[in-house]
Length: 326
Image 1 (cartoon, one colour):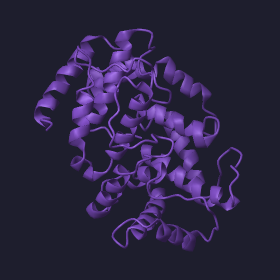
Image 2 (image 1 turned 45 degrees about the horizontal axis):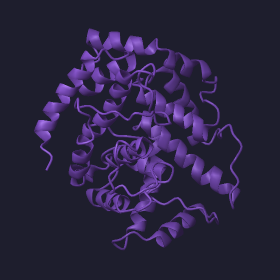
Image 3 (image 1 turned 90 degrees about the vertical axis):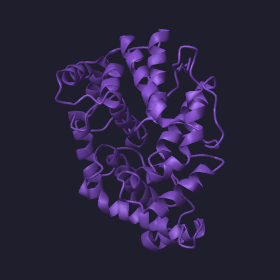
């Protein structure tokens, strides 16, 4: 059994250890903001955030953003850049995030479409009328979860999910039928409730899901042997060793996404214990090889063991604290 009070105490000791290692600007700011809970009005916070804004990572993000607010194709690269901005600690009011949110709003109002070639599917309407609005709403909810344009999409995908559990257990046929009755689009392409975008959208605020529906959704997700498409396609209940860096990171990311559910606390104990036990002899985490994707690096580079350990430890500590993944 995990002793939460002891772990919380030990986490603060770890954070102090990481700070004493003199981390680079971005991990230093994350440690202050997320773990030390320094008030944004304090001088230490302001000074640390200014250094983040001056960082070459942020400068490159600013430089490569188009006037319209996106980076390359929206589905794929722009989504990744938004996650990157949030992961390194940029405030939702940062100009890059404001600009891209303005672009997403034009899509949700039906004034624009993604600036990329539509993917080919059995019905072209699926991409434009189902997938594009869902993805856009989901990604916007990461930055601005209370945006009024989200309400329609939240209510719609909650309705689909409620229908799928109307008989007590999940029924994909009812879910597909309910979606067809709304969209009137014949397609074999499924968007079940357990896809990445629907889960992000429906967990973007605590009051969206009833406790009963929240638990049914998480229970189903936790027992899916193939995990979540594109995130981690293995069973979430099978713990992964940190020595398997690629899968350990993907598995950890999946758990931080499932942690968004209110009922996560009914599952957390064995996973927290396992992750806690993946520390090295110095009591920190070390993924050895940098995983691909938006998350790393936080430090300027991974050429030094110190930076690698700092970044790996922040990744693990986020699951053990109040961080909700994406």
